[in-house]
Each structure stands twice: as structure tokens, then as C-alpha cells.
Image (tube, rainbow, N blue to C red; front, side):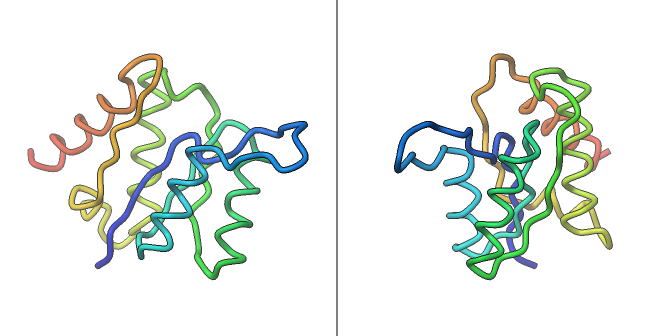
Length: 125
């Protein structure tokens, strides 16, 4: 079993620059895939998310794309993203997500971190 990572905000916003920089979320998703992790890429922007999935595909990596329906700063949306990532990264055993590489993310709130903690505590119960 390889590592698994959920990257929320994996898309890169469209920029008017001629040669725009890669966003942090996309960079993390690409680097994790290059290092052998299975990636769940999540974003609220479908086009930005697809850009990351396409980038990974060009490099020979497969990503689980999660189009977020709500702002991940909301705890219910964060819970749903964590749960869906775990189920889709390893449908045979979503519990393996607990052994995944866990990236703490900086958000306006700590909803994603709280959702990860709740998910992992639930696995131990």
C-alpha cells in the first residue's frame, strides 16, 4: 500500500500572466504523485480541478478528483471531502487512509483539520 494524500485547493486559479506560476495546491498534488502517493485532488472550481487532474495524467499519474460543493472551511463540507477521499482512494479499505500522509492545511478555520481528526478518531473507536 502506498501513501495517500488529500489536497484541498488543488486547482490553480486562472491568471492573466503570460507564464503564470503554479498554485501551491497543484504543486503539492503533483509533487506527491511524483513521489508515489495516490492523490485525491479537491477544489470548488471544476476547471481548476480538471487542470490539475490533466497535469497529473500527462505525467502518467491518476488522481481522484473531488469537486467540492461547498467551502471546505465549513465543517460539514470538510467532513464530506475527507470521507469521500478515503472511500475513493481505497474502496476496499477506507481505513487505510488513517495510515496516509496527512497534510495539515491552513484555512480560514480549522475545519479540514478537525474533520481529519474526527475521521481518524472514528477509525480507532
